[in-house]
Image (cartoon, rainbow, N blue to C red; front, top):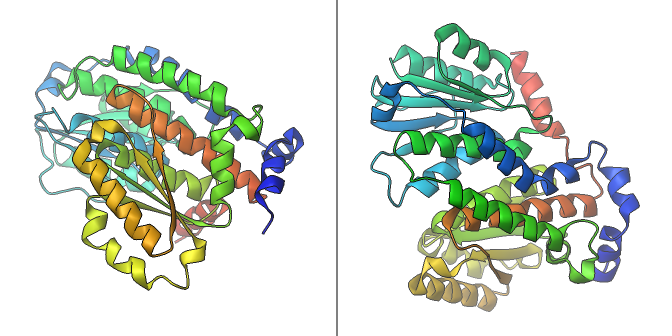
Length: 360
């Protein structure tokens, strides 16, 4: 394996990015704060029928990158919302969905087969519907059925459009009583990510770039990303971005659940210990009790010989903490893809599987 100095030198060579990143994914990742700002402006035009404000629950159906924003909405709403948010990844729906449910179909392309299936079932069950997409069959369904349609324009991967999707869902959350006004929270999150961009962007040398340094530490390792509470969705996003951008295995774990099962495997991992690196995502808002749990779990990993580290995330408000953590993970996953010598944008495995299933 190349030493750390050689790997850092790779990430300081602008030519490497140009050779591997054929579609300019780096620009799309670095522009997440701008996307969120634009998406929030556009989301103010989201109009809903009066009946939508009286819904019993919100169900968001989506897959892959188009479902991550729904997970974030659910986590942000959980501490105060009196209406539950459910996220459905698949063809079917829970039996409780009915005429008091608002079902949101979130699909970047508008043609995701699982989302089309579950959304169709929701409409058949009499649920109120809303569509978030760039177009495709879902946009057609919304127009044919007279449903609210939030259409955004974005030329890129579904996973890179998380800002547009999340801002639309935050606006929806305001309208149906899941969330208080989010304008101040969005401003804080955008400002934080813009500051992070100045510290972690590709043009900044590795010696002063924490995102590049972390990518080097993860190179050649199986990354296990651990967090708690709201930040578990940041860890979830890290896992999927390491998969899709970094083209590598990654695992996502949540505290305190990890300490009730996974911890028992620490001592029996002799053959894989050299391949592991655990990254804890932490913020002081999780509280002193959780801090002690983080520390104790890290000590158990160290005793088992597993390399681990804790990252202290930034941000005052929940949305800033969440998106700040997401932004760091997105950049780390990109830099890791470059170190792995791949084009981080295409997802050939996913594409092959979709093509195969389309022919069944």
